[in-house]
Image 1 (cartoon, rainbow, N blue to C red):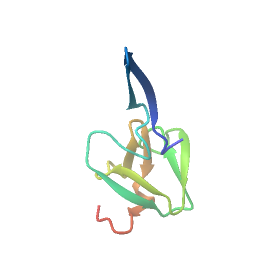
Image 2 (image 1 turned 90 degrees about the vertical axis):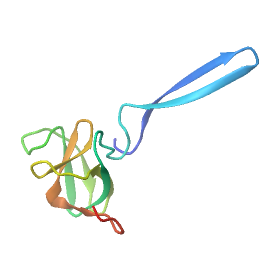
Image 3 (image 1 turned 180 degrees about the vertical axis):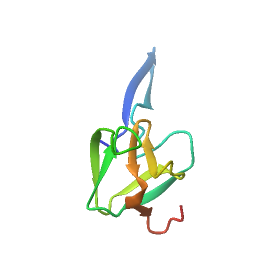
Length: 102
């Protein structure tokens, strides 16, 4: 679910020429959150739930395994980090990825 960009293939052509454009849209990839600085984090929990909003009352939509490296907002909001437009993870189970100082 995460990490695979969703895109659209657009083919533009004329006589003797064809241009192919791949437009990235929808899911921006492994935790690419919009509107702020990003950083790479490593999951420290056995399984880290990905939720539809910032809080345990929100629906679980996916999970990351221990040791997974994800991209998330640099700034935590009330203990949660946004991993894309509508998905959040608890900051309690993230640490900066090796070689990163987030």
